[in-house]
Length: 101
Picture 1 (cartoon, rainbow, N blue to C red):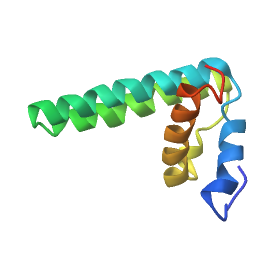
Picture 2 (cartoon, one colour; picture 1 turned 30 degrees about the vertical axis):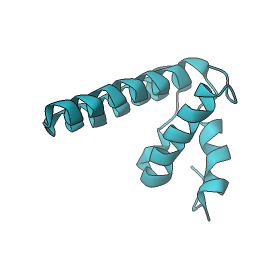
Picture 3 (spheres, helix red, strand yellow; picture 1 turned 180 degrees about the vertical axis):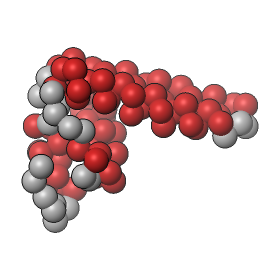
Picture 4 (cartoon, helix red, strand yellow; picture 1 turned 90 degrees about the vertical axis):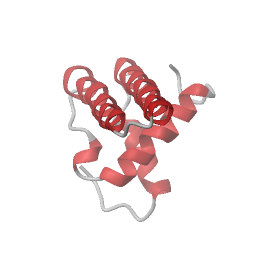
């Protein structure tokens, strides 16, 4: 896994390359949607335990995508902060059509 990266701008093309498989990207997207639902539940119920569900669901869907479809190790193991940001930028790019869903 390459690195260190000087900036997120340098990291993001690598991140996209690690998500070339469409099913992996869809699993990331689904996990992010589920995580947003858990965050909303935490806000509505004022119960922070929902945030644990957000964290677990986001990573669970993504890791299934990497291990079973992309066949690589998630970038989060080596670049946790850039990887977290990359997931949300990729989510936005999928919503706006910049990256195929």
